[in-house]
Length: 265
Image 1 (cartoon, rainbow, N blue to C red):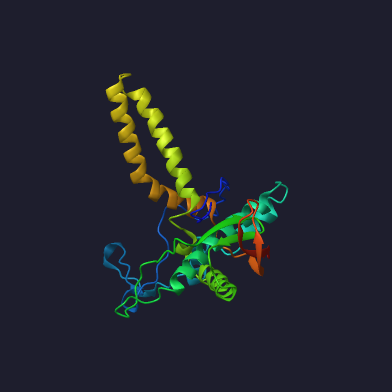
Image 2: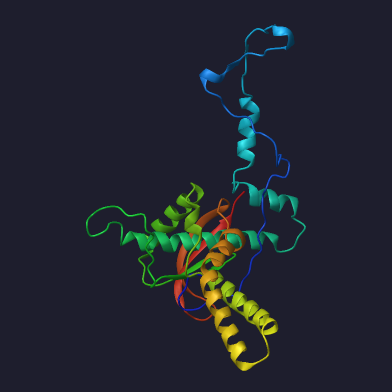
């Protein structure tokens, strides 16, 4: 759940999807034709010819259709909270997922701040990760570990929130997140148990199967962990408002910066 190199969190928030089930799953969607194809001629039987008619696309119906299929929606968590407000702890889960994404994005922005350009002074699209920085998310905000100037942190948090809500959703996923470790452990355990029952109960076969299970899990875990972050443990922080940044100790007594946030509709 966190990007800290010091420890991993065991939290496993749930995900809530916002797919529009009212949109048709099959059929042809209206498309905007160019000027050369806006007219067509219909030829009925017996060689008669109907007059030319203009095939005008229904743009008013097409625009809402495109908007309804966009993901994520800026109001999806707020709408979900209104519809399912009777579920205890739902707001905390939704807020934790958004805070988790903001934590990851802040670490990315802080890492970029010292590595904006390559030695040749040319821009690069490769994300730079500062492994000296880490974080831990809660439903009230997140702890940031590492030597960071509080002014730089304040600018980084503000910029991270802006970039996330402006469409840079890849900032919500981080390779050092504890989610990746959890996925790797579950995948390794699942494959090991499966191999144990599928292969003969002899030491050599079992050892070979265990090695194959561990290797397969190591190959699949990074991609599956990123998918788990994207769809389960993080959400774009459309409803977060930064309140304050202070120095405090976490529950383990480690000193860190704490970025406090509030929920806004």
